[in-house]
Image 1 (cartoon, rainbow over the protein chains, first blue to last red):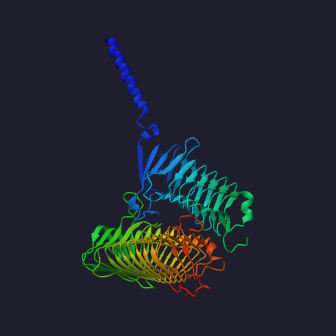
Image 2: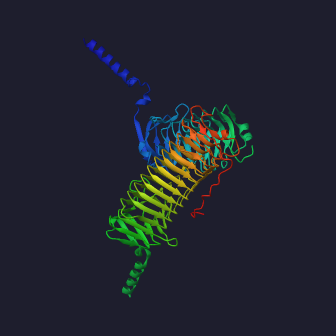
Length: 270
Length: 366
């Protein structure tokens, strides 16, 4: 009798262990069960985020502060109706606004993901994106940014972005107002437009894939001086729109299979 | 001798600017009509209650001390008007509202905050408002701003459920220039420049004339669910020039040039776009997304990519415009270029650019 009870107890223990290891029904990845840290507001001190994070509302990294996001972090962004009428910062949608420094430390095996919690009805973008305003020394590595109005928006900022993916954002990357942006070995795809350099911005674009954007792959206005090398620009509505002569771009990049490969901006001799 | 020296010391102290200024500390109120001149320090929240008028004379400087109890970057000291404010400077002796800090920053102080003041018009004339969080802030109020400068605030102007006239003002170098909702607004001969957003309104009626909207980083003018009459303005060097969402009205005789994206972007809007110059914009002169209304008599030539880009499923009526020397079809993007988009009707093109008066006749900033 004691043996039978012992066997039953052991079986019960084994069953408990098995159920714990499997997690909730239908969810096989342990990360889904880790606690969700909600963030928003103004960063009061240098902060490190990891695990699963919910961007509940606009988050401002003020000048002098650093936000570090560790490898493997998933940032879910909540669609915030309250910001649609009264934009607190730069966008009516939920935004991560960086006036200090942002370090996104993804790795090849553990990227950092920025995903909308859900898409609004009948729209393709759910949040503003990561906006840099007067920021310097920010670095984004192995990040995936999805469903934003602008994946990465730089206003008078210097940012280094590498091995990242900007996907299904209305604009993938905007460099504006004298920004110095480095985009290296990254992919910008499936948006309305890929990369825009406006108002005296100087972007270093190397080794990227810019593809399947509905309109422009890369747009460079007459006042900006980017450096493009080793990029593949394909299957966009227009490959490159620029005031830079076509020959300069063709030699260093592969531009093919676009609805139109080049469009020269007015005023420049082809 | 000692007594004489003591009296002289007291006299010197009384004559010093610190003791010659007016100081308000903590939460305080003016219970009678009051006139300010000289130097005024507000080290707290000063309320002007209903039935009370605060008049500020030319040359007065009002300084707010910096206080941010929760570290959110929003200064909390402010002037709270429930009665009436008459801040009446002159061109030679403006009234100044500013920070008391040695190294002032935007957001050092809260706002000139006007609440439920509709019986008589509040007036700011020849004022300079700087380093506030909201330089001018109003709810349920009536106000006239003239010949004044709003600069280096987090938000230059913010108001809702109010009626405002803004004449010959400069709103420049703020985080956002002017944002409003549920308001009736008349803006004439004013400048909105070098802000992140120039003007942004929701559920409002805006009449905009003879003004310049230039060099704003995001949108020059953005209205949602509003009505607009915009005539004779210059909208230049913004990211987008005029962006209307779910709105109606008229854009006439405006110059929209050198905006990085589109001169005019109409989304779900019913707007008459007539006799404007929308050229030399980075992407298109006009972009429409399920917009109704007519686009006619405009000069749409010389834009970076397209004269007119129709991204919606609805057709666009763009008869009677000047498209430039190149073929019209190449300067239009519509259902002929992507399946599912509406077609642009560009029949009856003008044979030459229309003659449109130069709208840049404002005295502001010239």
